[in-house]
Length: 329
Image (cartoon, rainbow, N blue to C red; front, top):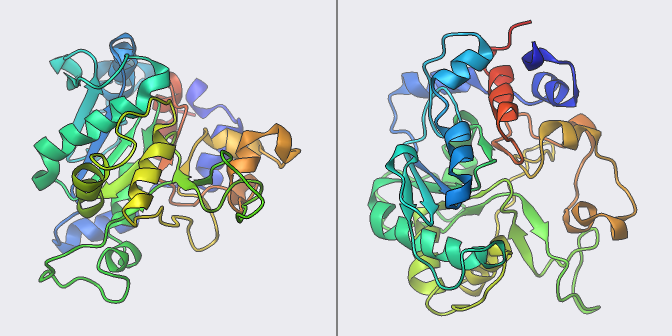
C-alpha cells in the first residue's frame, strides 16, 4: 500500500517524529483544563476543494486508508482542535469558510491584507472562546496532540506568565506569545546588522508555511494596537514578515520553539524534505539563508514536531496514517 512506502517521509515519521500518546493520556487522566486551540485557514474560492480534501475528509479518508476511521477534524487528527474557521473570499458553510473582505485585490501578492482582515475577524468573533490561535494555509498538517501538549508545557506556561513562575490561575495579565518557525529575513540587509546563516537577526519572523501560533495577549495586541498603527495599507505576499514586524513594533518577538536537542517543532516542508536536505551554497538557496542554526537529517525535526507544510491531498492522509499507526503493511 502507498501508505507504508519506505521513503524519506516514512523514515522521518517512524524513526524520529512521533505523537506523544502517553503524555496525551496522562493529560486527559489529570482532569486539568486543556488548552483551547482555534485553527484558522486562509484560502480563496478556487482552493475550497483542497480545504475539503485536507480538513473534511470523512468517508474519503476511510476509503483511501481501507479502514474504519471516525476522526475527522482540522488536519485529520484523532482529537479535534477546539475551533476551526476558514477565511476566504466566498462563504461556504460546508467547509466553515467565511467571506472576509479586505483591502485590495484577491491575489497572492496581497495576502498580507487578507490575513490582516482574517486576524481582525478572529479577534472580534472568537477571542473569548479560545486560549491559542494557529493560522496557516490549506496544505498545512498540524499535529494538534503535540501542539496542545507543547502549549500546556511548563516552558510555555511559565513564558506566558512572565518567564519566572508557573501560573496559579489568579493572573490578571499575560505575556504575549508568538510561536512558530523562526526565519531571519534576507530583505533590507546592511553591514551594521547581525546575521544568522545569511539572514538578518534584527528582522526575525515566523514562517507562514508551517503556520504560527498566538496566545490571547498576542492576538489582542496585534489587532487592537498593531494593525491600526503600522503598515495599514501595505500590499505584499509576505504576510508572515509583516505580521512579525507589526508585533515587533509592539515589543513582541518570535519565541524560540526548538526542542532541547535543537530540533524544529514547526517545519516549513514535508518530513522527507527535511530528512534529505543538506547545506548548499547559501547564496543559491533561500532556506539556507533564512534559517537559524538548523540541523540536518533526522536531527532537523523535533521528535514532538507540531507542523509540516506542503502536505497536499493523499500526502496529508498518509502522514496522519503513519503517525497514528493506521498504515496497512
